[in-house]
Amino acid sequence: MNVLEYICLDHKNKFRSKLVLTEKSIDDIESLIVDSSLIDNVIDSNYDIVLIPTKIVKNPFHRDDRHWLVLCEYKYPTGVSHKNNNRFKLEQIVQNNADIHIGITQEFVLCNKTIPLGWNDNIDIFKNYSGNLEFSQHSEPIIHELIEALIYSGITINEVTMTQIVGKWMIKMGMINVMEACDNLILFRYIAQKICFSHNIIFCLTSDPVTNSSIYSHCYFYISTPDMRDPEHGLQSIVEACEKLKLKHLEHHKLLSETNGKRFTYSQSNMNNSVQVILGEEQNGMIKEKRCGANSDPYHVLTILLKTITTTYNIDTVSHDLEILKERFNYHRVVEFDSEKPKIQQKQPRSFGESSNPMSESSTLSEKSLVPEKKKEKEKEKEKKTGLTGLASILKLNEDSDDDDDINENKEENEKNRVERIISSLKKMKLSHNILQSVTAPKSVTALKDANIASEPILPPQQYEPVNPHNFLPTTHNYTPNVTPQSSLYTLPSQINQSV
Image (cartoon, rainbow, N blue to C red; front, top):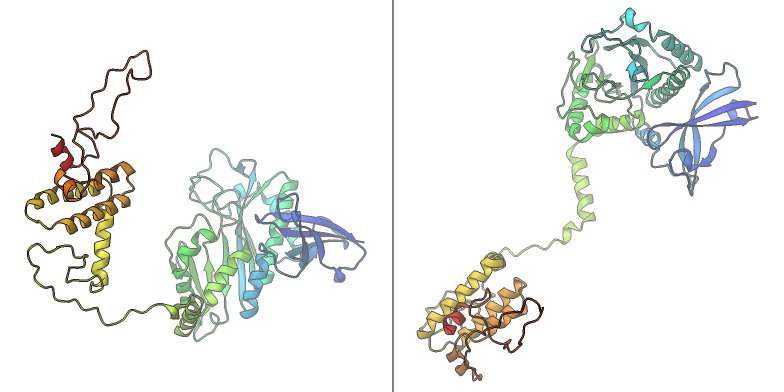
């Protein structure tokens, strides 16, 4: 009987596992249908997922032929890939771009509770302790156990060393194909985490393990495409890849790691650059992506990087995309304006007493002859007259019209247009009905006679009796509600003059 430990990553890039005992041989391992709670924190899940094996290695914690580690991706029972299945997205890109080689360097810190292994009061945080035997001996037993477990499982590593600070280690994996490199990295993290748990040690993959130290943990990716390995055009392909990554840096720098800045640089020898160019004797080679954090998801990161590098930018693809956008957003249905501008009629001299309103019927400049741009400007000016500014302009308009009464005898039409303009302006300001009544009321006694409206004598302001402080109501209620007080916020200037 074989004991299979199914391993997968949840929505937060954490490990989940499930033990299965089966009589089938290792070559006949099938997919496993499980509840979706295995990859999510939701307890009551209402759908199932299928765990599909992608890589099978020996279990280093049980040294026999019956225990195995099964790394899985997951899909829905219908065959549709799950939204958190980043491996499937990377596999689609690799199928269209074969012969891409990937190398990985993983940094991690071994911590004893809150401090790295081997730390003491004499350690200077800004001093480099790479490969220092005096301090590396504190974590060497765990590292040797990890190396033996990887060798037993068949996961190949090339280099192991303590780097920069005490307790921070680095392992390097050789150049292999994309999917195998990512699967090996995930299995390495799982095995290292279980070994550290057995020794009560924390396997730390945080990008910033020591606060305020400016020392970060990374996961470096060595990327080499067939064009980069070409002896004739290898260097040109490397530079083009770096320029594409530079264009996408502001979009991807936070996705790759929180410690990245907004500046992107690349060169051949400087270790502080975002991307390092590694060349061989024939001016071909690879690039070293150094912006990724230690806890990066390799499937997600390489999906972003390879998609950016392998995309070809030319005028044909841009034109094709524009045609798709035009068809999608009905670009061909956009209204096109006539090239001929509307003609403006010559304005005739206005005779004395004729209306000066450009919107009236007697005006020689009709509404249709206005240029659309000028018409819009006038409408904007009307809309700006709101609030106290608009009210002041309306009152000024009413006051100026009083001065013109002695000049214009035929003012019935002007009076009508003036009142309509005032009412429309007040309605735009959304004032109360009392204000509209005060505006629509005739402005003088002579206007009342001309309009054949019965006018009443204007009474003096109503005198109110003092209110008894012991009572909440006045002693008398003999007041006339129709009388406008002498001083009011909404009293027009013409009404104030008449009341005096």
